[in-house]
Each structure stands twice: as C-alpha cells, then as structure tokens.
Amino acid sequence: MKNYLGRMIVLVNDYEAAAKFYEKNFGFHRLFDTTSPEGERYLHLGTKGENVLGIWLMLATGAEQQQKVGHQTGGAPLMVIYTSDIIELYQQLIVNKVQISKKPMLGDSFRFLHCLDLYGNELVVVELN
Image 1: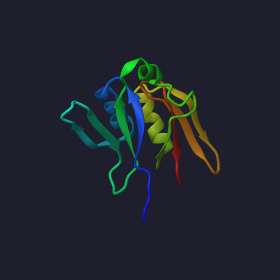
Image 2: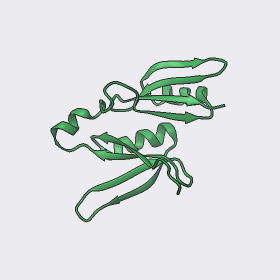
Image 3: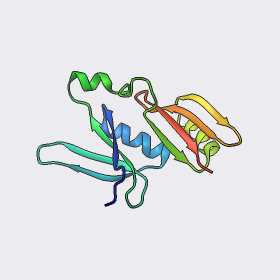
C-alpha cells in the first residue's frame, strides 16, 4: 500500500484570480481543470511530477464559506511552499506587489519568508538546501 498527500483545499472568491496569483508568483501549473455536468469546477494547481501535492481551489459558496476566505486556518499559516532560491523568489514577489509579512530570515540552517496571498492567507516560503 502506498499513501501520500494529494491536495489541500483553499477557499477562493474567484478561480481565475487565485490561479493567476499562484501561477505568476510560484510557477504553479494547472494540474486539473474541469467542470462537472452539475456546474461544479475542479481546479487543481501545483508543480509538475508524479503524485505531486497540489492546491485545489474551491469557490466559496454561502455566507459561512465566504467569511472563511482568507481566514480558514484561524490566523495560522495556510501552507508552506518550498523554493530553491529564496532571494530570487523574494525579488519576484516584490516586483509582483505581493504583500510580505515577514522579510527573508537567512540563518545558517534556515532561509524563509512569509507573504500573503490575494485573500490574506499567510504563506510560509522556505528554501531547502
């Protein structure tokens, strides 16, 4: 038996705006994008590869879900994104006017920053050595 993580769900108000944010800033690709006969859209983003962890963008419906957009983790970070170059990514985020909530921390054994997505969810970006 083989088990692995598949998708994390992120509530959004606009599929295309959210997809463009992750595509433009983190280089994510559309892994799956289809609409069911009932009109439900399934839009998954992530990096390329087999068994890749990804983001499933889910349109918030109803008042309760809409209130949770940008706050679905109660103020804790929503996700961790790994990068091979924190400084290059930081510069890209600045150019793209992404809000940085914690500037790069560059230690001997760690390199990370925090930024916000377009809804205010906190993302932790970590450079792996």
